[in-house]
Amino acid sequence: MKIGIDLGTTNSALAYIDEREAEDRDFPPIHIFETPQLVAPGRTEPRRTLPSFLFLEDGQPVGVYAREQGALVPTKLVHSAKSWLSNPAVDRTAKILPWDSPETGRVLSPVEVSARYLAAFREAWDAGVGKARQLPLADQDIVLTVPASFDEEARELTVMAATGENSLHDKNREPTLTSRLCRRSRTQCEPRCGATLPGRLQRIKLGAIPCQDSLKIGYDG
Image (cartoon, rainbow, N blue to C red):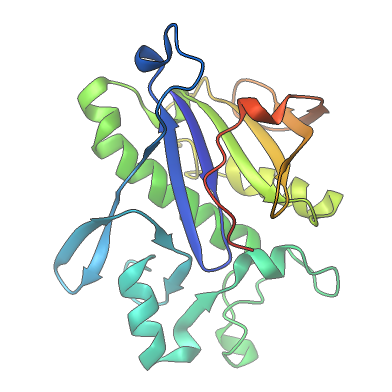
């Protein structure tokens, strides 16, 4: 599978191309993965996007339910992790979120929150398409899109989120995942992408990769 993940400020999404459908086709269909997520206590439903919100309660749910609960208890809602990830005025690896909480209630870093969103995609994929086709997410060719405005540190921290324990890969198995980090703007995907090395994704190697080879699944700022 060719997979694209867009970590957005307010919504994140995963799209994929089935290589079986790409044979002898210049423009194979792109499928949006409907991510199962908690939408109410005890109720899980698939949605085309994963709202980029995490709620600090048992299980630390992400997605629709987290967003709705956070509207009721803002001090327990983690949001805008992507914005904090690109903010040079703060220590982006420090536990500064949720920002609306008192300092003693800030328990997660922007990197850790981004990793939680990626883990949610991995868990949902592996329980659905991955299980049915025996195609774990960690073994696929993945493109992570980031804004063209991201500085070098923000790009490296995005890779850090993807390489962390129990993020895109399961800590209980050794992945063969090869991932690319592509910059994008509102109008185009720039021809400057990063290619991570196979294995546990411990470092990123920048290189020129034609961005038309990437999956563009929308802009969320």
